[in-house]
Amino acid sequence: MAGFGLDSLVVGSSDPRKKAFVKGSQSRTWTSFIEAVTATGRLLKPGIIFKGKELQQQWFIDELKEVADWYYITSDNGWTDNHIAIEWLREVYLPQTQP
Image (cartoon, rainbow, N blue to C red; front, side, top):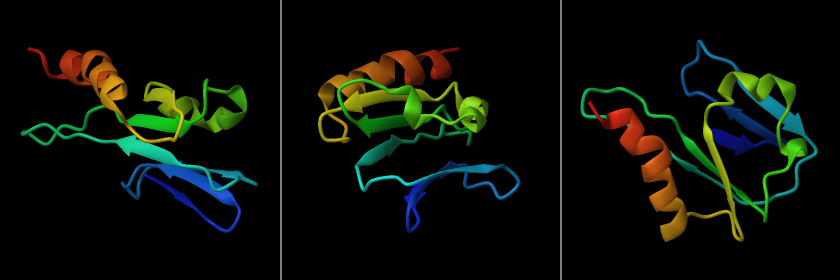
């Protein structure tokens, strides 16, 4: 889950028992999330798409190491496209759903 406060980015689980992380002074740029759940209710690793050319270290705070295994990628507009969808299927969905 992600959202913007007055001047911060919040990233975290919708589970109230887990932490949410906040980074302040964010601009209003697009960030998209890919989330999936199996038929048995198991959560798959989410994909986070940042607007930009390359992932930048300044986007990640030390506390995000807890969610470091999430799938991170960039696109020019911060939205998904065919390339990102195929990459997420290869890197996340298929490995986590194959017997």
